[in-house]
Image 1 (cartoon, rainbow, N blue to C red):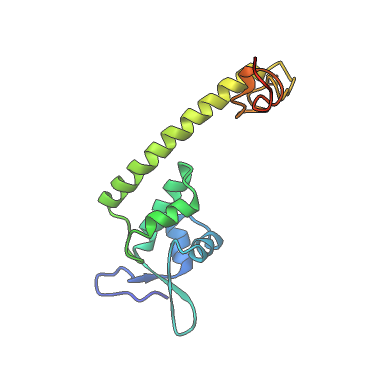
Image 2 (image 1 turned 45 degrees about the vertical axis):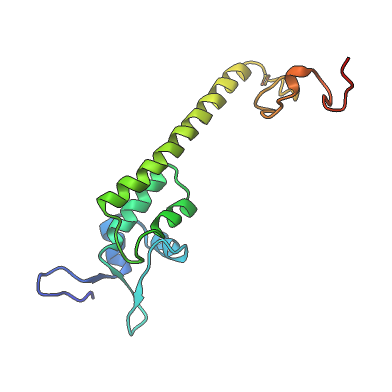
Length: 154
Ligand code: FES
């Protein structure tokens, strides 16, 4: 049972309480903890207890994951905050602005992939010479077939 101060809200939360309030499975919370994204203290009976700020940290992690940010990048972002602090509005604005630029870049890459796939639909050649999806980095492909750097140009 959590300690309850005079204002009626528990100062710390058990892992079950965090799971219930955040909607995140206990196993996921344990995983986040092994990755250093959240942190708990241990009671005398060796049970995990989380500061209330963990709820906002978990929300932060979930939103970031929803927009495709890797756990490593989320961990790096959270590492800029005090260990048990919840990200505030200013923290969120700063970190999410950086992620927006990454999201724009990923969208641009996905559009290029979609356009390349449009060329492939109905084709099926999977040719290393012609297919942009099969050989996306072939910058020398326009110069002709074969090892362009080794061929003597006339
Ligand atoms: S499968 Fe033919 S161009 Fe990609």
